[in-house]
Length: 113
Length: 112
Image 1 (cartoon, each protein chain N blue to C red):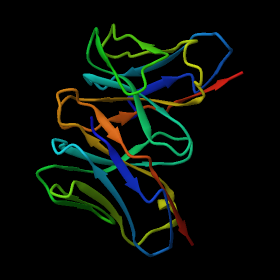
Image 2: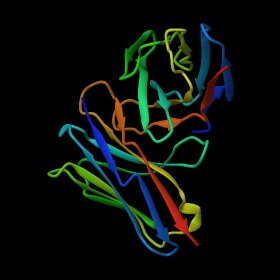
Image 3: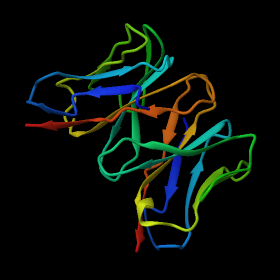
Image 4: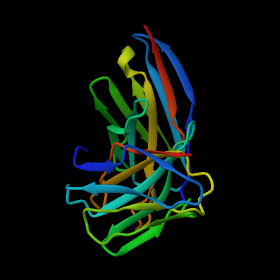
């Protein structure tokens, strides 16, 4: 099955700086990669996603890049704000027929005012 | 994701007891999923279902059971065989195909 690794596990940045979180996956057939933001005790919320036929996608301060050859995808947050502090989860949808998603272990982002 | 509800918000289990977590969705999604989240770990898949009356085991199905009698409902039972059930349980649903999952608010299960 698919294996998703996420780095770093914790990340602290100064307000206004950029943050980058990287995930690697093992199954070259994986075809869909969402990113979720999860605040403490709350449900994960989708913030951006990318499909395997696209290399980059942006939404205001958030962007995701995908490198299919290297099998990794990254989340980029620019001009970070304290409200960006949360756990960020990456996921990959496996290439089989099971519609199964595989999640990374999460990155705890702290934005220091 | 407001169309997915989970109950209860907190659940306490005694030793040897089976407990059932509820998950309902009104999004007309075909697929439903149960995940377990432990501190410092990501989401681990327990069971998922793509169609009524059919479901598949995920990576950590031992000690859990599910049913899918209706499209809208996918309850999870934590059996006494699950020796370490304390965790945050998340239900999710999605359309089939390249569609993302939307999560319910979660149930926190604690052992007395």
